[in-house]
Length: 337
Ligand SMILES: CC[C@@H](CC(=O)C(=O)O)C(=O)O
Ligand SMILES: [Zn+2]
Image (cartoon, rainbow, N blue to C red; front, side, top):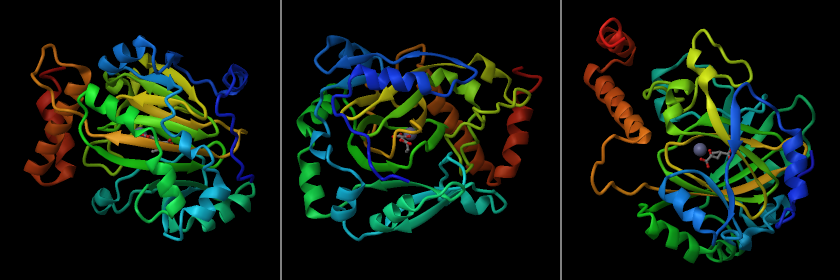
């Protein structure tokens, strides 16, 4: 498979409209995420409302536009990188610290450690039916000098200005993502604010408001797939997940130079657009700021945080996750339903 990365930093509208015509359709409706120049005042309104927006011309990662497979191979260094492999194109995240409680869990994706050079070899020699690979590595001080210089030249003044303006907490990490053509990260939410910067290739985001929690049925908090939706978007089980029929979302295509503001607790499915080569992205995860004061009614994301705390409290108090479902059902069925 080619390791080339499709690149047209100022991707003309033609690239996006061509891609839009190729995208897989799902059973739910979506509307487009606004795509705005970073100086457009509507960006601030959307970010204050914690709504997604594709922000253009930030130059956030312009110094990394040359990060293609060959450059990264020669400059990232010989440290092992975190790579996931799967015989399918879906890469469902799992928390390996929770795996011991689920010894029988069948994982479709495997965590492998390999050098970047080994990763690009596997991608180059990929044949139909072979494993598919997705590199997902937090940028750290093991990278080579030239990558450090590129990293230092990110538009940190813009990023830091936003971080202060919206009272976000600390930047916790930058994840380097190098995906083979067509890889998918299924629907999940994260507990951090996120600037998702696209460097090479194109990614399609399906985004859902935190209130869509009741349509997306996340795994229990104690489960290794915590925060991930249980619903298979390609073959939804409407018996188990009846509210999936009410799902409604937003959609965005991000290309080189685009930055997607992905608000904390917003659900997202991320698809490397098929037949457009490898994708290279870097995300910027920030702790969310603390609310100055609680305002009622609570926001959907606050209710999600509350439900998470209840599940965590019950699980630790009862000290046996197998007893949690019965206790919660006893508490709710026939009483609150
Ligand atoms: C973690 C992988 C995912 C991005 C994402 O979910 C995030 O940045 O929160 C993707 O690009 O496939
Ligand atoms: Zn995510």
